[in-house]
Image 1 (cartoon, helix red, strand yellow):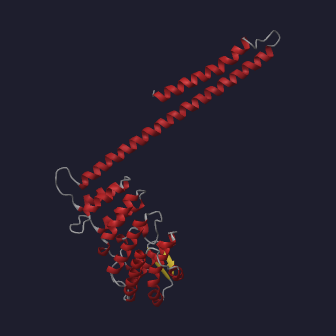
Image 2 (image 1 turned 30 degrees about the vertical axis):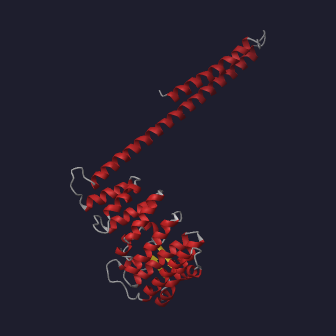
Image 3 (image 1 turned 90 degrees about the vertical axis):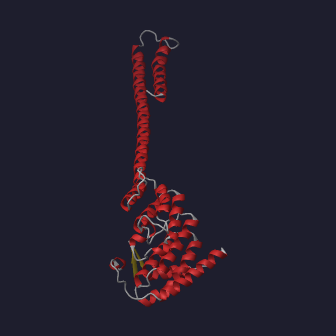
Length: 320
């Protein structure tokens, strides 16, 4: 029996003694009943019995609550230990103790296992070295899955590292491939991200788009992704900046003659994109305003070159 349990039992015994003994002491002492008052005595004793029963029930409830709390604490500790052991085994997949090099499948398994064990911050930190520009040891698809988990995690540090990595490798990704962009920001947004993480993700989207193919699929993809940011972010400065980028695409989107656009699970109407474009505004930060204007100009030039349907596999996934 733990120390807290002993305290509760001791307190419960004291309460029970007070409830049972005090009324009896009063009856035999200051409130001594005379002859002919048997009915009153019976009523008082019945009342004492009710108090004792209620006290026992209360004591049982308190002991039960304390026991449940202790069990929950033990289960949480066991779960934490299991996650720690699993994370260590996942780490062994990434860095074998025998000094050998892990194959890509083992690396992918280890990183994704860490994300499932609520260790996305550790997984994305390891990804910095495993997904290097000079010697990448994991595929783009695996890296994007880890980044997606980090963006969804509650750790602001993991989110920032994920956004930084995505921006660093943006020009090597294909905007028309669903596995090359995190689903957490696929036509939607995470408004609680830090301002720096938001800027990195927007920059990654622009660089990936400009370095990718110039076809209608890529144009539709960037339009829906930008609209998701504009729709879900409540910061007027962010919306004004994204509106400027969307506006740079509107002319070409109108020329294509489409009224609706789909990317991932999101569907956006041309009228909604036009509403977003009308919200364009200059950023109070002169530096950011110049950058957003340059990105808008680059996107406008890129969009004018977009024509034709994609020829690679999976093109139907970008169509309505």
